Amino acid sequence: MGGTNGSGNRRTVEKQYRELMEYCQVHLDQIEETLPEPRESFQEGLAARGISRREFVKWTSFITGVLMLPPMFRPMVARAAENFNRLPVIWLNFAECTGCSEAFLRSSYPNVDDILLDTISLEYHETLMAASGKQAEENFKKAMTDFEGQYILVFEGAIPEGMDGKYLRIGSEGKTSKEIGTEAASKAAAVICIGSCSSFGNVQAAKPNPTDAKGIRESLGIRTINIAGCPPNPVNFVGTVLHFLMFGALPPTDSLGRPLFAYGKRIHDYCERRSHYDAGEYVEEWGDAGAKRGWCLYKMGCKGPYTYANCGKVRYNDGTSWPIMGGHGCMGCYEPGFWDTMAPLEKPISDQAIGVEGVESKVNTVFATLAGLTVAGVAAHAAASAIKRHGPEEETKKKAEKK
Amino acid sequence: MENKDTAMEKRIPVREWTVPIRVHHWAMAISIFFLIVTGWYIADPFGVSSGETVHKFLMGEMRYYHLLFGIILTMLFVWRMYMGFFARFHANWKNFLAFTDWKNFVKQIKFYLLVSNERPEHVYLYGPLQALSYIGLFVMIFFIVITGLILTGAGYDHGLLGLAAWILTPLERLMGGLAVVRYVHHILTWLFVLFIIVHIYMAFWYDIVFKEGTVSSMINGVVFKAKEH
Ligand code: HEM
Ligand code: SF4
Image (tube, rainbow over all chains, first blue to last red; front, side, top):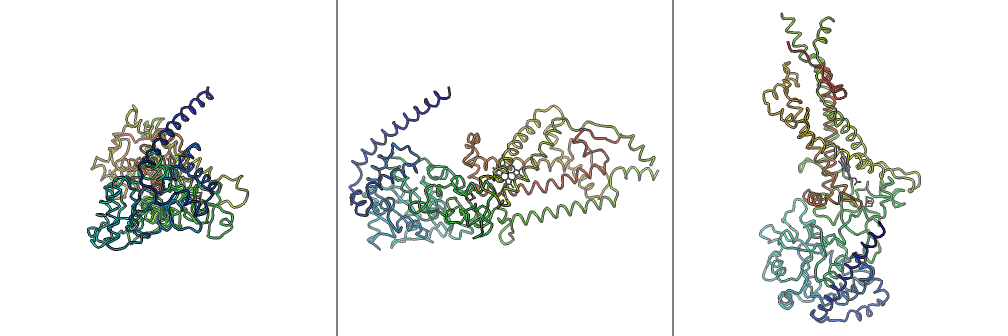
């Protein structure tokens, strides 16, 4: 019974994947016709940067896995990658530290992701472009009209809304980030937010948020794909764009706009130290014996249990490492408001603060004091009751005595 | 001596708590006790440094029992709500309205603060202050159950709770993420500790002051009331 059911199920799933595959092929044929010509052939670019065909094929397997697609989609991923640099991209830098761009574009040796991002058709990127001043602004306008309805708009950084947005004005016309963002978003095919700043506001929006910074989605009220993280993983950005190329649609997301393939499970669920968590083996102090043996960082304030991210699965810098592997707990940077909700970043929840600003204390200290006071209060009450010989009996007795 | 004997004679046993209410009370007490112990371990675990990792599963066990009693508490909560609306004896939700009797409320506070010896009337199943604090308790249970279910459903192993994701996930977002959910769960735990201290003390205080057998009443269901004269 179960067997037939199982294979029946598998047949249905396989059929669905085959249909998806056909759809993907048709869509790729279509975009190969319509996308603007590339400035440089992708395969030649790979060869010039010393990536062999074999390495490229390996990489397609990896990305297919990251996107949670079955292996038969590898050739589709390869085709999409070949068209990656034909997709026009406008990249806007708002209130941010450029760490995301750094994470994406700078690594000690190139891998396929880096090359994709190196050769990406950046029509406008404030940090990377050669143009400046008036010329830069013209490029921006030209890119918006040339590729209207076709370009991917990438936001890096939050929008400070305080003082009518005057905390951030760009260019000789002195436009606020909100004005620029609204205009660019209105003509984009899709909007992708890179990093936690554009996704949720991040450190700019942390208490007390003096500039009233907000994430793009909240500020502009538009639908965005949020590749959150501080910095996010380039693989998740590349995966999202490849998904867009393959299926003509952005990947399914959670309610915060984060693609489910990357943000569907928690750090804690993917963590290589998890067996030490379950066993009760914890690092108690930086550099202690447990730290040397790779034990769980829960007591050092690891935020893995509260953070949805695939860091442990894809890692950073071509799969080299990631924070928990490096020996420091997760600090929850993929989550909205993590500076406020997860502070102190190197301490567990018992050490979180409670109270209003200025008169804050650790929650455990506050409540242990309250519990102590309660016990003392109860004891005082007991003593007072004993002295007063309280109760209705005494009352009736007194009445009886009077009589 | 003689006086006391006559006082004893004057007392008549009254059925105060039905069997389901008593079973429910102790099931809650046991679950909450184990939830606090295991929850405490989850919040501030002590490490086990000797032995091989493969043979150890302390946090795993604690989480297992925490979730087990968590689900039991969830069902107990649903059961109590059911009894509040559909039970025929001594469990009706209207008893929780005792606090709306303001005169009696003031009387009870005065009596508790040892200011007056006038005893608050016993109209409902609970006194006015009791009613308020039990409403508070149910609110606390409600929130700790909801936050607990969110935390359970968040993991890789959400199992059947996946069916409730449509409501749990939006709630998680509304609260501001799992870290906040966990923080609220932690604070609620402390509120339970405070509640339990006062609750146990008041039960014994009643027992001693009224001599009606309050403490044992949750076991045998009977309080011994003084005869009206
Ligand atoms: C009186 C009732 C309860 C108490 C006192 C209690 C206490 C606690 C405490 C202290 C923690 C640790 C939080 C921290 O890190 O600071 C915790 C975690 C947790 N509780 Fe409860 N809890 C109760 C009810 C429940 C219920 C009803 C459920 C679910 C059905 C539940 C599920 C959980 C889960 C899933 C965790 C997180 C475990 C992990 O991530 O490893 N709890 N609880
Ligand atoms: S190191 Fe962090 S994410 Fe990993 S098991 Fe421990 S608490 Fe979870």
